[in-house]
Figure 1 (cartoon, rainbow, N blue to C red):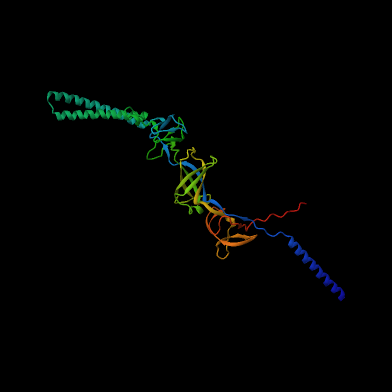
Figure 2: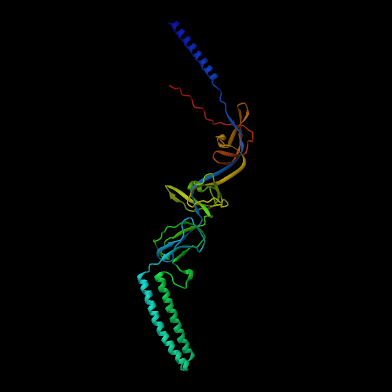
Length: 372
């Protein structure tokens, strides 16, 4: 019995010894870990945030009539460039029956007063010529007659204005002719011949006949999230890209940040505006969608590395990299970081051009899966 136990123990020891040798052999056959390295390079690093929006004119002018009526003729169309004073449309007045009757009655009343004053004036003139009345009495009669003449003329003109919207003697002040108040491009003509329009007054805005704008003064109008608004400030440079214009970037300057946010799809958005630099003569249509990169920080021609190469000390939280000192030998090197764009980062000190930096978090190749 003891003999079998002894043999069993010896067999176990032999198997264990052979297994250990096989394990060590397999371990020696594995390739050693070889770390790749990357070198710093001279880069321009830009830290930015992106806002979405559209291109709109800096100022839009709405042309509205100062009299109600029907559009009789339209002399412009969208896309035309016009100057201040150019004719836009003509309105045909549809008179109010009550106002027309009141004006007509005023003319009749003024005519009666004029006829009466004329008779008085003629009688006073005869008496004055005979020396019966004084010059003061004659002058008073003459003044009353001239005043009646003027009142009659004014009543006639008012009747014509109520009936047709204009009258002789007022020249360019005729309010049936709608003219441009500014120079610019016609962006929109929302009315057509035959449409009824309402005058602009203290009680309503009136009907817009045309929208004008100076397309040489365009702005980017967009929104940024509340998480980004604290990072931006006025006068920061913008790089605007327009979806409809490929391979083109427009420079702009951020000149407005809304003091109050607006909820949009559950998130608080802040409106921003940036004036485009129109040194570029490319025509940009109003309303085109665009994206604006807001330049938060910029470092030109600086020493930079990939941000993935940077490690942080678990105790001090200070950044460092591992620099090669020999064949697969690396030394920990503290560094000072600058501007980062999320991919590359500026290195102010700690490494120099030509240093080989360890890629410490390199991705291991996927294991081959045997095909069945």
